[in-house]
Length: 92
View 1 (cartoon, rainbow, N blue to C red):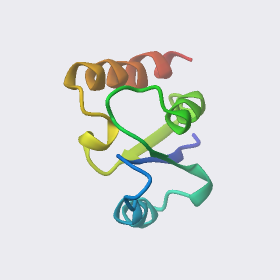
View 2 (cartoon, rainbow, N blue to C red; view 1 turned 30 degrees about the horizontal axis):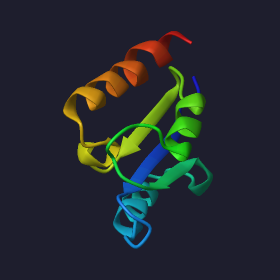
View 3 (cartoon, rainbow, N blue to C red; view 1 turned 180 degrees about the horizontal axis):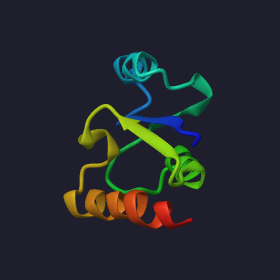
């Protein structure tokens, strides 16, 4: 069974650096081509790289996120995205 590794990094603005998050992904052996980075607010999930990442995920993928606040800042929206990632994507 294949198991693809993916990573998601987000910083809130263009001026911030995602270096710590990238280093964490590399330490988990996530291929660089499978790391998606957004440089924008976590106020919602309308982020280009996050949307691309979602299309890649299925039941055979492992997704690394350094901390849950990198996914977003609205707890209810984070829960909804988690449901999509863990339930809907496992059925595709």
